[in-house]
Image (tube, rainbow, N blue to C red):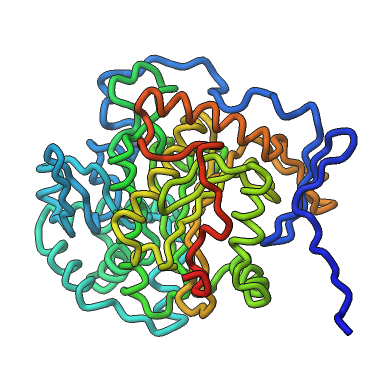
Length: 445
Ligand SMILES: [Zn+2]
């Protein structure tokens, strides 16, 4: 006799009064959206916009282009000559001002996990190429001065204002500098703080104000850094990639940047996902993308990626899935990377630069055997978690998925008409929405 069939709980339930109850099919997170709160305006500055001071152009914060020496020694930069883009690895301090970095990869001055974490806990040694880079950098006067400046800055900020570079011995200097050359927490910084021609401090340059081409370069430069972090540290089980945009979302500067952090665990969410994935290898098609398609939540798709208004998230969330059969971003083809970038860029553009957001990347960890698709979630940080959430673990999300879809789709059509997002994406009802669009599952190959 067949066992009785128990249907899975529905991720989305609309009640008679209009309350939408959501349960994430991937993490089990429970979320409610109560009616009447969804149409509140979101984003926008708390204070009236201020005119920009022309004297501060290029020097608004430590990530700006006239302040290259305020951040640790660069690992690489991406420069542009017209349509040609070039990566310049490990520039010496003397050459930093010879080109303008469209994007630069630098170590985080205040890393989550330090070089010492890996050295003391695992016996991690500095790789030979990083050691060579450090020697070369410290062999010049400008390089030594630069490292001395950032080490001193770090010591001061860490509550050690009396120690300076000059007071340190050679061994101590080398130890403090090592994290800049062999650390596992990097930042990818974009060139602009404000948009070209900006007049006020509300004209911030975010992901969505980049051109689609610039965004694609930003994304693939970050993917290359991700591969490099895995390659440099065999103890790294996962490289977390994220972008905090604006202070309410955790950013230190209102200057566009992503962060990459190598860690020695897969992360709690990945462990939960893995358990579910073992029971249903097609989970990400069935429970995420197919379901979104049946609920008409797709905002856009192209040949290698699909974006939809997500469900079961604490904040209004757009999810962008790569459809590629390869599960690692650095094994994607150029066309596949571009397709993911175009949809992530379009979602940012539709969100607008004044909405605080977290962009979080998820991919199959180094030691996971179950294929998992690469996906990027974009969370609008428009509400604050409070006592209700803490006490019940039920989260209030002010915008339900269909309302989020409508806001985003309206903007996407307008942005496409203005030529500000990539052509070639199929928006909302234009999308084909065939079942099982994600090819990470080898059974679908
Ligand atoms: Zn800046």
